[in-house]
Image 1 (cartoon, one colour):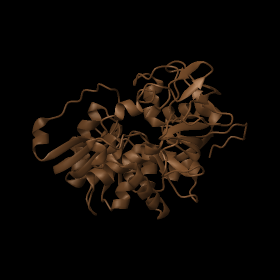
Image 2 (tube, rainbow, N blue to C red):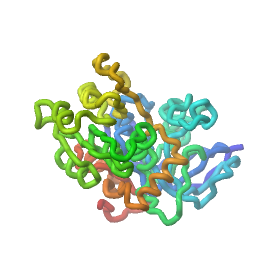
Image 3 (cartoon, rainbow, N blue to C red):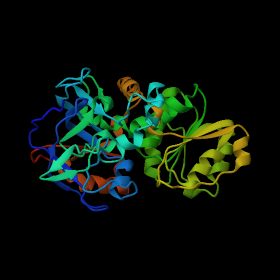
Image 4 (cartoon, rainbow, N blue to C red):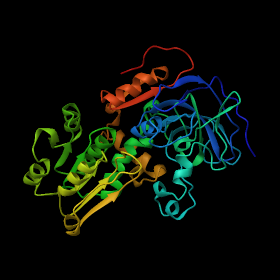
Length: 381
C-alpha cells in the first residue's frame, strides 16, 4: 500500500537538457511505495558520476534530477519499512535488490538489477518519484536523486548513522569516499608495509590515499598533474608524489624508487593511465581501475606483462556493502584515520551552478550542497 507524504516546500535542481544549468524549482514527491522513505536532505555531495548524466554520457531521459551522495533526516516511511523511523539520520548510497546472488554474497555493487535501480530515472515499475505540475521528473538516480531539499529513497539504500555526527557532510560516504576507500580496503586488502600507487587525486583517489594510510601501506605513491592536489595527498598520507607531465617516464621513476608496487588504483579511466598503473606493478601485483570516461572505453595492455602474475580488475562502488562499510569509515574518521571532512567545501543549494563549475575546474575537491527552503548566507567553507 502506498503512503501519501506531506512534505513542506520541496525544491530540486531540474535539468531540462544536457550540459545546461539546472533550474531550481518546486517539485512534489509521488506517494511512497511500501519500502521507501522520504528524506529531508541536509547535504549532498557532487560527484563526477553526476556529471556523466548532466553531459549525456549516461543517457538519463530529460527532465531529470540527479545527485547520489545525499544525507539527511527521514520525514516519512512506507508501510513495510521496519528498520528505519521518522527522525532517523541516514546516509543515502547506491540502490541494490538485496535478493540476487551478488547481493546475498555481500557484493551489492554488482547487483543484477544495478542498472535498472540506479541509472534509468524511474522505479523498477517505470513510475516516477518526482513530479512538477502534470509532468513526470526522472529521478531515482542511484535510488535517490538528492539534488533537492527532499529525496525519495528505499530502505535498502538508506544507512542509519548516529545522531551526534555532522549529518550535512556525510553524504559523500555513500559513493565517492566509499569507492576509493573500498578499492583499497575491500578489494586490495593490503597488509601493513605493502606498497600502493594511486593515479588521479580527486575525491576517489584521496579516499584511497587515506585508506592506504589507515591500512599501514608504505610507500604510498600519488600521481596527478595537479601539484596542489599532490600536496593534499602528502598531507593525507602519501609518502611520494609524481606529476606525470614533469617526467619523461613516470613508470620508470616509480619502478626505480620501489622495485614495483604491490597494488595500484586507477581513478582516471584513460587508457594511458590504466597502462601506467598496471606497468608499475611488481610480480605478482594487482591494479584496480575505478575511473569512468565513457560507457565504451577501449584500453590496450600488454598481455605478456599481465601473464607474469599481475591482475587488472574493475571495481564499482568499492565492492562495498554500504550498511557495513559506511559505519566502518565513520569509525575510522572518529579515530582520526579518515579525515574526509578536510576535502569538503559547502555551498548554498541555489549556488549549484557555481559548485558544478568549481568541481569541473578542479578548484573544489568535494563540493557539498546544503539545501534550504529559504535564502541564507553563503555556506562555503
